Each structure stands twice: as C-alpha cells, then as structure tokens.
Length: 93
Image 1 (cartoon, one colour):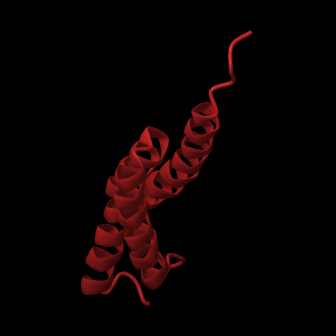
Image 2 (image 1 turned 30 degrees about the horizontal axis):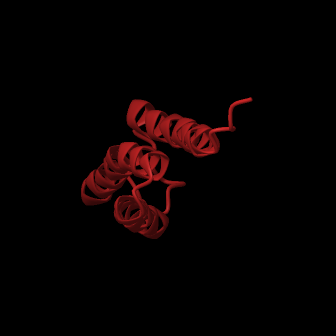
C-alpha cells in the first residue's frame, strides 16, 4: 500500500484560492469597476502572498511556493487598476 501524498492537499487548497482570486481579478479588469475594492486590503494581500512565497522557499514546499507565486500578478493587477481609477477620479477610496 502506498503512502498518501499530503502535498496534494496543498495543491488543492492553492487551486481553490487561485480560482477565487482569478474571479475577482477578472471582474475588476473586465468591468473596470473598483469602487468596492479596498486598496489597503489588496496591499496586505500582496504582502501576504510575497511572504508565503518566501516561506515556501525556506521550507521547500512546492505547493506553497506555486500557489502563492501564481497569485501575485493577479493581486498586483487589481492594485494597479484601482490606483489607475483613483488617479483618473473614476473611483473614490
């Protein structure tokens, strides 16, 4: 009998988080609507993803590294769109 590979749980959790983030980022980028988006929350989320990537490197965990590294550009895209809208006065913080 083979041992269960517990890393699969990390990949599944990462995939679920990625799907949630992708849906939000797609909505923001396709609609250009950012009024309901908190810039502070996305700054913290960006920092969170970066810290998790570093932690994943330290503990040598591919699920942690991959799932968080993939999320970084999506969070950054939402941040940049929010800032763009704020500067164009399309949005209010």
